[in-house]
Length: 274
Image 1: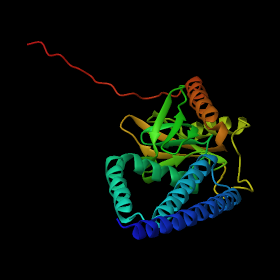
Image 2: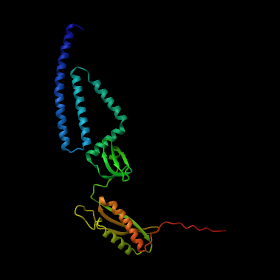
Image 3: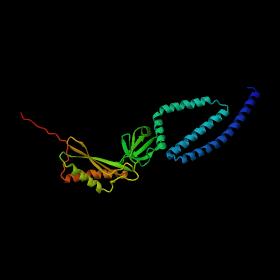
Image 4: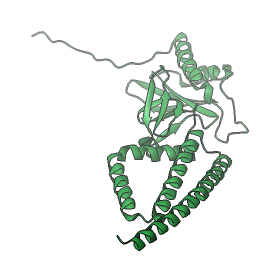
């Protein structure tokens, strides 16, 4: 290479290097400013802390990667190959981690739209329990028998789910079967007395819920072995199981003490001697 060309190349490279340093300093200041701005916006939007830290990291990585590509371009290095390499690597990683990315997207949707929160009692994916922790890829619930269940967020965000903690009141539906020929009015009177005696059972509508109603008892169907009486009792969500077990046990004891028969399936076998 001739001396003049070498000098020209060195001079151009020095100019580009100085410009790259200036761009780096300005870019570093701009990145810090943008990250602070993004943090303020995320804090104002009350984003979940788990999603907040993750988005903060993603924004930081994207901005620094962009600055690096700009600096490399200023230095005269061809950037199209780098961009193509990053795109190919991203596609390969995305295909290899398709299930993980689905769980990540589900976690983002859950943390943004909050169909449930920590402490809620939910039923999903064949499991029921109290939400213990919401992570970016999984949700951890604790069942009533103290088992820890880890549910991937992908299926949790796209499948059906019951959240028993969103409403302040729940209805307890229990069916009782008594033998044919039983006095239905006496059965309803006995169950109604039990419903009225329990202070946890609401006796009528409440101001903060349009669906709560007074206790109800009625004949729901004629079974194979007896008549089926359905009971509906409203209570606070936190008292659901207490009321459920109270009604089941107390109604059984009261009806039994009054002489009512509870039918059960049986099979008669006749043996013929020849």
